[in-house]
Image 1 (cartoon, rainbow, N blue to C red):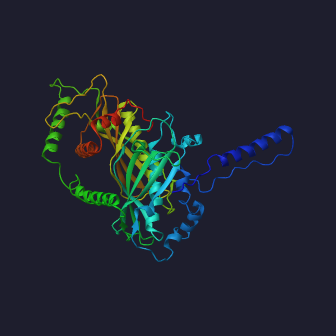
Image 2: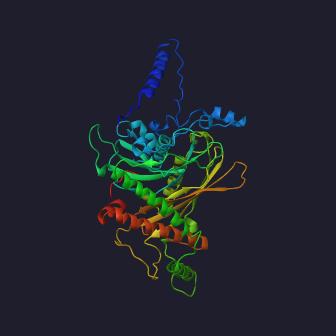
Image 3: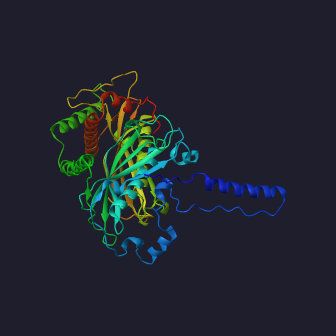
Length: 475
């Protein structure tokens, strides 16, 4: 498949040449030409241009005027047309883009942070944009698609140098109903004609998108997926199994059922330890590295500006939302541990409500679980494997809600969960019943993630990925 090579520095050099002509004219006293800078067509905030070319079909001022006139902004999507619902192959939706980080140093302004690491939040934002391109290749025009969920993300092979990256993905599961699963990969980009290797893959993630009628906003059917070979059949069956597993997990969540007996016993033991810390007749005192959960919180509030909108004009791009939660989680982990966190995983999350342009987005990050924990189920205190070089895993939960500017009713927009490791021995202590439920929920997520990791990686690979000492240029 051919790759469209995008110009990287040409427009910037042209602007510099124009300014140089202006400065030279002033120096020699001749009448200069005015140096005007125009905004690049369809520039977006942070999304790689190769993924954003068709994301904003009209300038915001035009969309705003249509809104004021009570007209439908997404006019192209609501135009009556015959939809093709014939089955499609995985290859029909395949899309691939090269991010030239190694060849274009100007991209470092967006993708490299102050410590020289690749900003994973920006990569996550790009992947959501990539999934948007892929889903429309499968559904065709005439529908509105939104990001509904994101599955677990782990670093498969950490980067050790800044290099060109390859974004790729395709639809991997679609039953013909309204939802579709899209699997995206980020890998080290090889030269043209050079085959890729398994160790090139940085991470793999799966988005769930839902197709809606542009007028009624109700789910609509999409083309089903057909498999061309046994490998695709295996991928399709895995997607089907994940969809069924999500439905089963909803029935066992803490919103549906109470904690099981071992979890209830653990809650009681932690509560007794908390009481002991404050009992003047007890010699046990709260260690300096045990921190109350309420003290770990970090919160932000920001107004959602039009440059963060999605292709439907009136709502905020889901990738931007994801990036904001990740970077706040990173700050929360750093503030809690007083150390630089290393990303381990992002757990499955659901986008519950859209975020309108002009609304206020509230994010609250909390360290809800640490491993080693304060206590095990048997009441013992787990110790670090290496007391001289301690490593603690931090599970950070980010709760997101949105209000209009007039501060009316708040709507939850999602819960996002990230795990980091830090070179410190620190532990979190819940106090209220709500905090205990957050603690147990995070504990379940960490344990489930460990089971999945052991299934996908050897013990030596897991130690390398989770180590805070190995060279990893993602953050």
